Image (cartoon, rainbow, N blue to C red):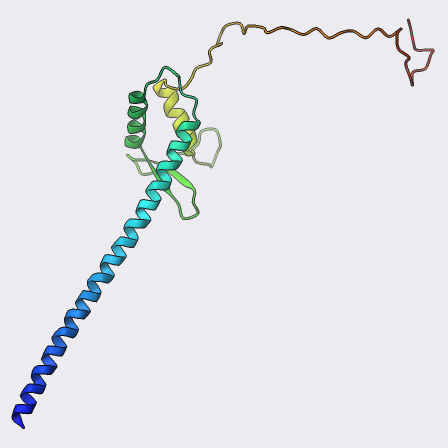
Length: 167
């Protein structure tokens, strides 16, 4: 009988050890899965921010003389100066990296600057935004069209009192 109880204890300890190993492996898989979910969410958020940043930057009319290295430097300067974040509702938030606060608009009281506003401001300060080629100069006139004057005597006027009609 004692032999049976020893082998039962041995089996119980073996099963308990296997159960503990499986439980710890399950916990490891769960923590890996949770960290993977967080990483995927972060990657999606970063991808959305980068694509929106590129779209806003391509919407700017940059000076045609600006080369790709100047644009890369501009992007680097903007990302060093500002933190772009995505809110839960999908709106983009631009924050100052030094203070961590959202940038307030000077034109609209109570509102914040958008990514487009920040890019325009920074591109203007950097001098890479396209300037008006006709600034301060005369705009060349194209073929001015002179409208033909209708000769009133040739056509009949309807609805006009003849007393007010003068030839």
